[in-house]
Length: 148
Image (cartoon, rainbow, N blue to C red):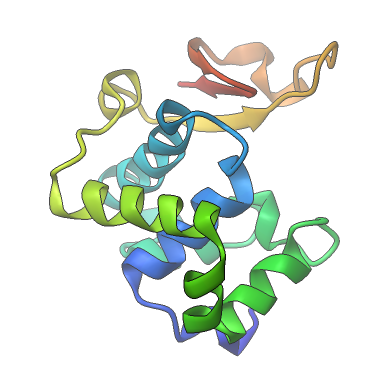
């Protein structure tokens, strides 16, 4: 993993993940992605025990895969965090949601807090992923489906 991501604190890396996965979604969609991160920290040790470990674990969030269109944007933000925060309203919004989820002032998405979830971003008319055939759809928020 790129060292620029590793230097970010929990709120920053969660904000960057929410930004990469859901910046075009409603607040509910952003909170849902953050809720998945915290659920994994709390209940799925194989994904990592910290926000940083969960977000940066390979194959967990597509925005951190080098071939993802968001990867370069995220790397630039990580390398220039203060400048990005000063000029990027969407990043500021994602950061506020991350801080609120971490300090408990923003409640987690209830469906996600009750289940071990994974998410799948959909496109209009797209078919579900093959792995979701054996999973239960528990929530659909914006362009994301959440499975247990």
